[in-house]
Image (tube, rainbow, N blue to C red; front, side):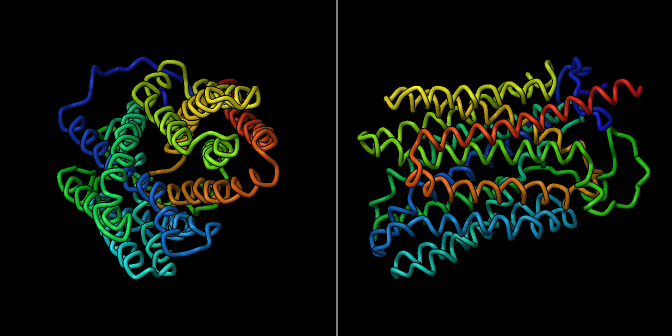
Length: 420
């Protein structure tokens, strides 16, 4: 059985082919480049927004509201973006996303230049469409390769975040004072990066909508798309979506609270920047080999390892509040997130037919990123009210729920095997 066979979705298998053809490699490389550039925009938004807002708006508690509006934009636009791609194809859909990115960056520039906080929030909302498209790169990667390469393709494209971890913060440092007011040039740079993504997308050959029902080189009878509730009620979809939600939610919960905790323990802001950098590397560096691990050991095994690593990060965080407690805890948390989230994404791709992908992928991302938005919003509040240690204890409950989802997936596998 295939590692990601729609009938199993769980078992590892030795690759029957020696490699991908040149065009598939080229497409994946270009898509990973788009991931690197697009994710850099997201990183810059997080790094610059709060600091730029407080230069004119004297409500520090609301300084990150444009970022929150970006999360809300993702939730609002994920269905329209996915359905547009289902109808017109990935290439057009992703380029529309880049146009929204340019428009959002322009509005952010205008809001900052005119010291208009509401306009900056609108800019964040518009950028949410671009981020919704960015998150679908991993699904597009799965569609560029044969079935047994899906996990590796998702992993490789996700690895573009490694470059983003360097590009984004570096551009913020270089551009923050190039023009006045501060960070105006940073938002202008975000505009330029979306232009680059738009251009690169023109060179990627995505499967056409007309041929999306061809599987492994053979035409398949086209069944009518099922209602969304039928797709979403599949046990594998429920468990996979739960795992993705809890992976991203827990990671965002810990990551968003950690800078406040680090500064609250008396460390300088530079230490918080360093810890987040290590965390982001932990999130994306494993993507170079996560797909191979999934093909060798099985999806649920790698997902289980991710949960164990995230729990280990909590243990390190609870063990003390020295610099290395934060550094190790956040790095291990990032690696665990990668294993759990890449595995969950790979499994979700086995739950729908090609003509159902738009609404199924949109529902999955709506669930995942609504959880992320809630977690990031609640993290600062709970860190202020509870403190770092109780917050980590609460994350244990989230990880136990993720473990329950993975156990359910393994139980489904055992039941399916016994039935055959």
